[in-house]
Length: 77
Image 1 (cartoon, rainbow, N blue to C red):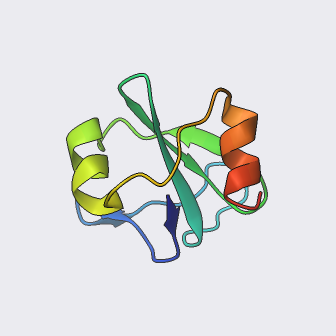
Image 2 (tube, one colour; image 1 turned 135 degrees about the horizontal axis):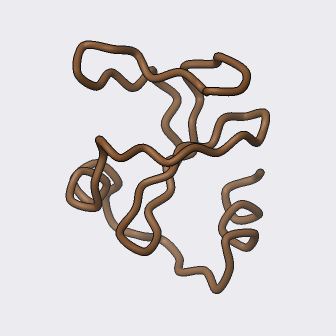
Image 3 (cartoon, rainbow, N blue to C red; image 1 turned 90 degrees about the horizontal axis):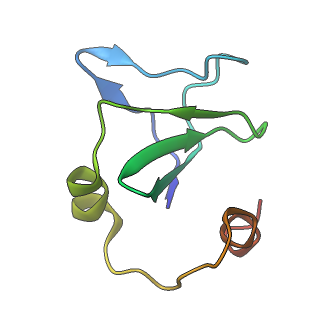
């Protein structure tokens, strides 16, 4: 799901480990894990977020994708 806002966990703004950006994320839930992807294409596992958090915030799914790349294309990345 697209997430244009900063993510704050444990009173800390989450930033991309590679480029430092802190907003405009794609949040991806797959295989029980939640991944963050910045606009530059860097990905990082976010262990402080779980599938339950993702499901509460994402709303109904509009598609299921066979591959990660299909998901990214669907979301315009």
